[in-house]
Length: 452
Image (cartoon, rainbow, N blue to C red):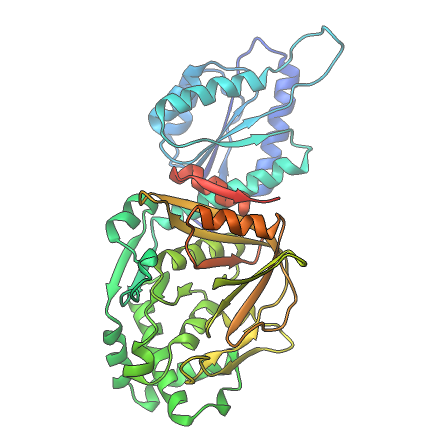
């Protein structure tokens, strides 16, 4: 994930009464690592910041999206207090390991106590939690944590620019996915655009054959077996694809949820499943059954992993393989199909109308299951479950994704049921559980993480 305008500010703080040779060596090594990882995105000072006033000066000439405050040595709470006067965005605290010398020798840095001081002040002033980095520049985990923090902070920033569309209402009994504009803006910073499904049906019906050439080309590049569908359904699919893509482009929509049944089967005569599948493949996360928070889960997953997420119901578990199978009746990003089989089309298992998608997803060694949900009091919460997507054929009519969990599957499912989690999930093709935890800290949302 890239953002040409993302800016990072490095604030290395300390006092001059500790071992300055060790402190300056740590500063130079940290500076070098940050420049290697982030290049022009990061601003680094010429030297350690030895006073709160120096911190203030650095912030006065910057407008960062992420601050990395590193306790090179111990520094008192005034340094953090000064930083928080000028900055309200995501902040990471970086603690260095204390160099080990002769028993009873001098404490050279005392970085950990400095971080405790900074974190205490942060906790007293702000409602969210700081992001944490612990370790030296020679430890691979340090660089990986810094990269994860950047990815999570970039998602938080991108949320404020997101416009998510809700096309139609959730069906009866599916209210868990119904988005509210004020809630989305207050909690995530995203804007909600609402439109009735019939409006896009009307747009599709008004299109002529010559208007949908781009949709035909898009379908040809992603879908396999479309020529086996009834000609009228194929034409109607092209028109609907074009209507959805035009709507997304004209309104700068970054993600969407769409009503699907019964409207598109009964009123339009052709399902919207394959339309959403192509939208997912071209980078517009799209959920069916008008599940707006499912679509937002998919959007976060795509931003963190760089790949479309699978959207589905948990339909089967196997204690023997420790797997949980996710399924939907005809919608999944075409890009997730196995390369050797392709994104095949078929008909809806219940309505017997096509085109819908029919495939099992490709494998992924490290995957994360994500859900943006709500607790019994209506407060938002995040779920992240780690696992592996297995190389399995399609499990049922429709699309399927088989995930082997890191934790015991039966216990995990039992806990999800007891805690009242929703019946829709995004399966992310990448290990992003830690980024989700970080994002939860930044958004002040509780995160249930099931990683082992």
